[in-house]
Amino acid sequence: MKKKNNKKAQILSAAKKCFARKGYHQSSMDEIRREAGVSKGGCYWHFKSKRDIFIALLEELMQQEHEGWEELSSWQRSEEEIFLRSGIFFFKQHMKDPDIIPMLRELENELFRDEEIKEKFFESLQETKEQIKKFLLNAEKQGKIKKYDLDDLALIMIIFFRALRFYCYLFGGEKEFSRLWETLCQAMLRGILSVP
Image (cartoon, rainbow, N blue to C red):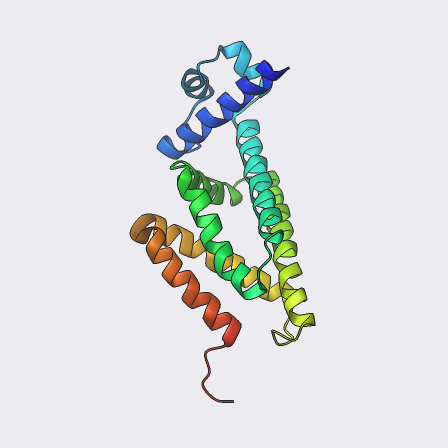
């Protein structure tokens, strides 16, 4: 059983490389299986189509993000510190794998073309939003933040993180991401108006 799972992981890893290098539509099942070093039958044993591989990669990314938030929630730090560190934590996670950001770009493109992928992505977005809301709700209960629509605040944080992640991947790197993320968090947590 372990060998089957290993082959499946090889195929997913190879597909991520192919999708990052050539794009989803320009990559073929044959290229993916060659990159993975598996037979055609072995590849089709695990995945019926390239789309199934793509969806499996999306599910894998969702699981990694969920595990990341679980780890963050175990930290014994203030909500402010967790917010400041969360963006940096996920940015570092994404930068460990050079194929992840281009793969995420391919995912974004497919959201406009494939309803099932769009639904899965929305599901992932909702899960992440709920995890962020837990931190916001705790901070709100303690009187650390004003009352806002927590769904909106969580979604805004996700949107800013994802846009900043792509910008810094292309132009800035980790140091720039850390600086910009901290500025964003400080502005969101403390406000930008100087009037009382």
